[in-house]
Image (cartoon, rainbow, N blue to C red; front, side, top):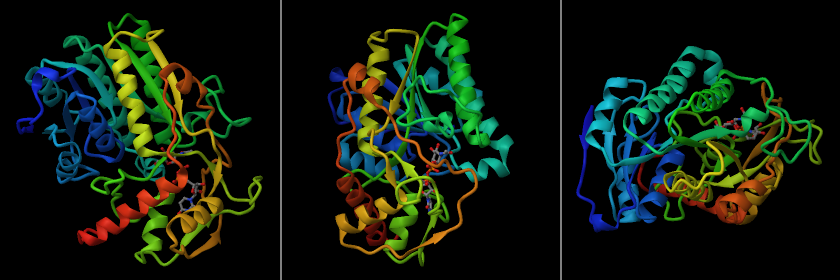
Length: 358
Ligand code: UD1
């Protein structure tokens, strides 16, 4: 385990306490770290850099003027994680992003997914008890709803059998948290079910950087728009939707990041109404793949070569959120217009080219 720390240039006396962000150099973790630092928290990130890069810390520092502490280690390594808790006795809350997240890969390598995602959570829960952490925010997904009977989905919508080991890890992790707390674990948890996070920080200093060929729509779309990929395949135009392509709820990553700050604050300040709270994080708007391509072209003026391809195995036809619970109880709303989000994704792609990264 290696610890890299730089003195924060913000007055430590103003700190609201320290948050442990696992997977903090990743896509959502890095955006959340920026929001935590801006809100006055100290942050220590633990990340094994398996799907991210140390340079992300520079981006975070450039935006917020503060550099989070960083520990390069794997959360499945109990010893390394315990060493971190001993080094940082001021950790008041945890936000757990450290997980493997590619649906297709999870079908090929299920044990890797179960080992990473479940062991990470179990280690964090055990150490939370030992080191008096007040609460843990868990990254879950709308994947737990499977193909919903009706849309929009609320937190009460039925949980459907998982269609991939990745989805199964999200369901099992939710159950592990509930079981542990039901058994008397002395802390609280907020489970956040994300819909489809997209876009990047408006500064284009941090963003989504997938390894290899992107599996998700937006990175594939922006890489096609810039000429790295020849054309975007639209997976199916024969679904039971107005234009035949799948419908999702695309949520701006900065809006999503802000919800984490509200959630962790709620835990740290003991304001939760029950030991485990669950919230959908989406916009409430369903957008089809073809609509998204048109919106991107209109927002950026850049054409996206695309063609209709076969359906992708395992895809859900349509799912979008009812975010009312998060709106009312957390006082949070995803309000970035989709056009702005798509422009931020494009700006990030252009920035990657400028920096010679992609
Ligand atoms: C999936 C997971 C979600 C996970 C996310 C991130 C499910 C049901 N959802 O979301 O939990 O958080 O991945 O890994 O398991 N598409 C194309 N062409 C492409 C790529 C995608 O048409 O090249 C379409 C897909 O068919 C889908 C939409 O774009 O309709 C969004 O796909 P994607 O970005 O991969 O996310 P999900 O599959 O919705």
